Every structure is written in C-alpha cells, then in structure tokens.
Image (tube, rainbow, N blue to C red; front, side, top):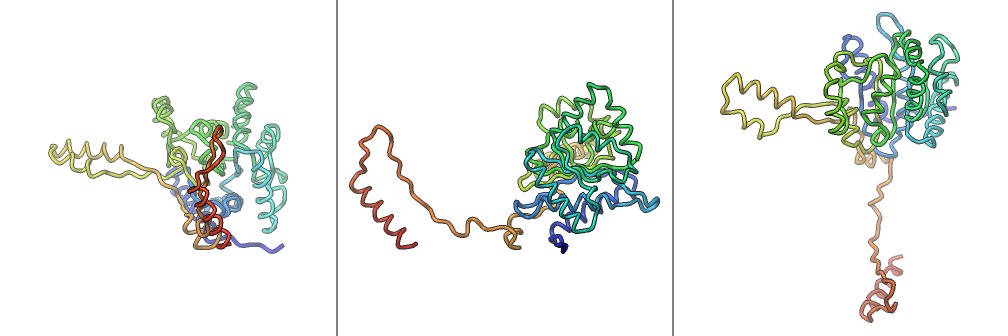
Length: 336
C-alpha cells in the first residue's frame, strides 16, 4: 500500500512539538508540558494525531538511547469518533510497516486498565491507545474505590518514561478537572501549572489557588498534553495554550509618577498579571482555503427571501406582495 505523505502543515506541527519536547528533555527542565494545535476543520486533524503519536513514540534519549514515551493516548469525547480515529491510526501505521499490535481501541474501562497494566517489555503491548475521556474518569473512580490507584501508578512510573495525551476536539472535551484526574491517574503527582495550563473557570481558579504553588513545584513532567481543535475556546487556551505576558498602555502610563523602586515593583506585578494564551501551532481556515484542502462555502451562495404566513390569518397575501413574489420567482427561474 503506497504511503501518502503528510501535508506541510501537519509535518511542521509535529516537528515543532517533538523538537520542543527534545529540547526540554535535553535541558532537564520542564518548560512546556502542553501544546495546543489550532488546525482548520477538514485539514486532517485525525491523521495529524496519528502521525504525532507515532513520532512521539520514536523519540529517544540522546545519552541512553532509551525511548522517551511509554504510551500515546488519543482521547476523544464521543464513542463514535474512537472507531474513526482507530482506523485512521491503524491505516497510517500499516502504511509505514509498523506492527498492528501498536494500535489498540479501548472500548471499555477493563480494556483500558488491561492495556495500561501490561509490562513495558511485552511485545504485544499497544503503544497507541484510542479511548474516550470518560473512560479515564471511570477508571480513576474505580481505582480509588478498589484502592489500586497506587499499584497502577507504580507500574506506569517503573519505566520512567513519559506519556502523551493527544486530545481531539479539545475545545469541548476537556476541563481543568478532567486534566487533573488524568494527571493523577497516570502519575503520582497531581496537576501542574507549567506551560499554558490554567485552572479553567474563575471559580475553579479560586478554589485551587491554595494548591497552585505545590503543583508548580512538583508538576507531572511525565505527562504531555497535545490538544487539537479548529475553534479553541478560552478554557482550551488556558489549559493547553502558550502563556504570554503583555503590558497595556494604561499600565505603562500609570507607573510614571512612582518612586524608582516602587515603580519597578509595580511594573513587574502588572506584567505578571497581564497575560494571554495562544496556540502553539496554527493552520488557519484561510490557509486551508488557499491550499485547496477545504471548500469555500461562501464562494457561491444565493440569498433567499422568506415570507411567513401566521396561523390564524386569512391565508391571503396583499396584491402588491403577491405580485412581488411572483416576479422574484420568475427571476430565480431565469437565473437557473
């Protein structure tokens, strides 16, 4: 079966994510655990997820030649999407000659737990697991009730390898709580504020404010989140985007009359408070239209005028309106 190459925007996004992770690993510092890819609808996000999972699993430590990633989970919020993504990932890896056992579809919590519990050196262990975010929730609750959470974490931590969570349609499928639960399930550490991960709504930010310092100190650098969406929400940007600081003109002018030391302190405080979040990689709808990957639905359209007859009337239109509608109908027929 011939291998269809990745499109330029797919290859670029994957290369940038892998390069960032390699750089962070080489420098032995956790600079950004999360990545948000904003790619236009219809530009091949499913294949991007499959190819990214494969490339992450091939990353190796330059000193030990040990693979960096143990698992790559492709996570969605709809059962119907799991089959589609599983087929896309299986076909893509088959074209590259990878073993069929590398990809698995987890349709229930028992399967997910069985796959995650396999020994790292098991040749039949799947590397890419397609599942739903709800399965992680159910597995976390089951593990807590059965007091087996520590055993599962110990098995995953024994390899000292990383885990990738590739989230499709991330604008609707993930919240601060779901990210924290997945982090807690896959690692002995709780969530982290590293990279662009925020705390979701204002209420959640206030509720977890007391724990933020501890999360920063011991955040889970083993778990990397890569979110894909065409329409990132504010929550998705806070959870997965790159955090950038900025200063407004009003902030800059408001410090001019202060003493030098006080002015410097207030500038620093304002600079830290003013920030925004942006995607790590963007492939816009305009670019997709220019590349011919999606159709321009606004190129050919016709405005239609609708007349509504309200129930209870006599059902007749005024003569002037009736004549106008007949003329409009005749013009439409001539144009066709």
